[in-house]
Length: 376
Image (cartoon, helix red, strand yellow):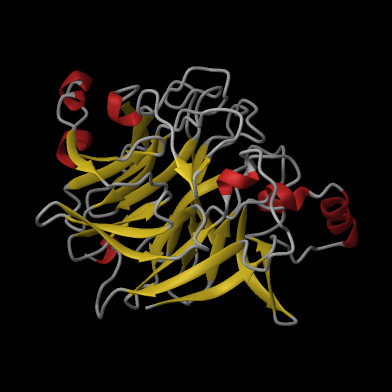
């Protein structure tokens, strides 16, 4: 039913030079190198995002290459395009999408190690995978995603109507009040609009605490993350989302978000609470059949929501699936997902770096002709 595609005790790169490799090893930067999301393009190439939540991450966007039988990461689309300090290059990518035209939509957080995002660094980058060329790079301004508090997390793409929806978890600095929200990008006008700003569904659930394997997720402090997981129904009419520190699933009709004349107050009042998933969730992805797949942090696996009868189900679980982060489709009937031990890597816990299964990319078969929402 499910299998391991590749695994690591810790991430490693196919470095362009010895100096970069020695710096990475000497400073033990791999201890904070967390694979956030994995996707596969139409040619079968695998990609991995590694957000720069700490200093020393060699490249934030990567493709997997195999050298001497070992899976390594290599900067994508180039090392120069991942250069730290260049606001025109990729600074920190967590969420991204590969659409039905084989174009990669990269959401650049702009911030490194939770420092404020430099002006011009927060952006939506569109890359043509067929031609290996830049299509566009659109800066996300401070008034849409505040440089201090923003934590641009994930996105979904609607090419049929010409919109992209982004989540801002609002946890860009632990000492500042959380400011979650949803950002709507209009492809035609190249403009952004922030909606559901600090609305209850995009904030952390009040006084929420959770555990994995009976351990508090963060040892010495409460974890607070707003709007995070996001998914779009195959008919493009419903946007699903959730916060990490909470178990509810929320939805809103995209017609309200596409019409800029709709008042923000009306949008706030139109949020649907679909119920509890029974688990905290990071990443989500909808298929072309009316199912929404979501990661189960407490349940250590993947669950799914059947939109036809609004029911929640467990799909697959394994004790090694510690903090399942991203989930996507390979367009051949399977979901692809990864686990990264985020709660241990950043939560104050020790990790056995000799364990060859610390970080894993998984594949699980769903069914014939089941694909991403993008192909609905």
